[in-house]
Length: 232
Length: 232
Image (cartoon, rainbow over all chains, first blue to last red; front, side, top):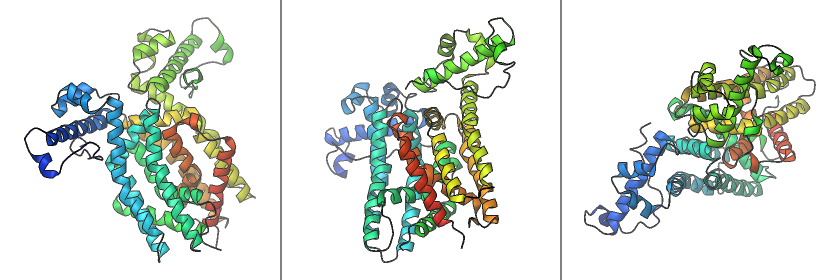
């Protein structure tokens, strides 16, 4: 897993200044932001390689080349640091997809646009980094229930709610017959994601699917959904 | 999680004799079998409470009240012990359900019998112990890939293959139109399981679904499947 080199850059709470400020070698806010980012990159790599339990704040400080004090100045504890990495990655990965759902409300080609949405949905969820964090969070859910619930609300549940709202509007336009839009949204989601996601949680992103296989699965799920939820 | 007191009794490789022999206090095969079972019960409880990484063979020996030597006489290492617990639980949980699929081939009431099958499928997968082990295995999949793959093959993949074979036969009888039975089986599986399983992996069995909610989800998934795969 070449995870250590691909750490994400979750939302910038407390990250001041523009690119120039952040790149300057001088001390000041840019330097703090770089240190914070180095800590998050180091932590993400270690969590993905050794698991949450198998990673210590000492190792994170060492890999980030900062003092342990600096780590704790930026993050209250290991759970807080892990939470920020996970939720930041989710927000970043899911946002473009949720925007695409918003556009589907106004579609003039439901079969084509829903199929494109399904393809994008599957690609978004199957990103190696997103999958690996999903696995880690599920594995730690018994010990970090607040994080696991936050994950569920922030990703699957939120996306299904946005989808449901869209399907409700499409039903109003007579393009779908979905009297229970939330249920319809779940059906769509798992017709598309179900099997590849389940397999990848166990067998890993490296033993994954080709882009062509994902496309075929997304298209097939969309066809079944449209047949079942076709109006009158 | 009151897991420690609910350890399962996976398949009896090397477990001799009837109940009487196993209950006798005398030394001999019954005593070995009881020790082996005590080790598995202790290990299952500890794994579920503290995770795989958070559990040592020393702790397992102490809780089972046997020597560490006895643990290693029965199991090659911690991974072997965990594997036997996980796969044994899966086999035990899934077998009655796979027998029910076999019977569906001869159905004279597909909507009713498929709906009953869907309900049983969901109940089987959502058993707290099965769910908790699924979480643990997913969480350790990066470090124990052989176990995770064995899990996938032994449970989801195997069940979907048996379902596909059944759907193929039902297509032959003109009761379904499923030209790709494996795909149809995946669609059925995740129409029924998808959302409740995903939510429970994150939010846990304690924040789960009522029996009535599971029934409603199974019935709705079955309806969508039958509409989409109805013969011409």
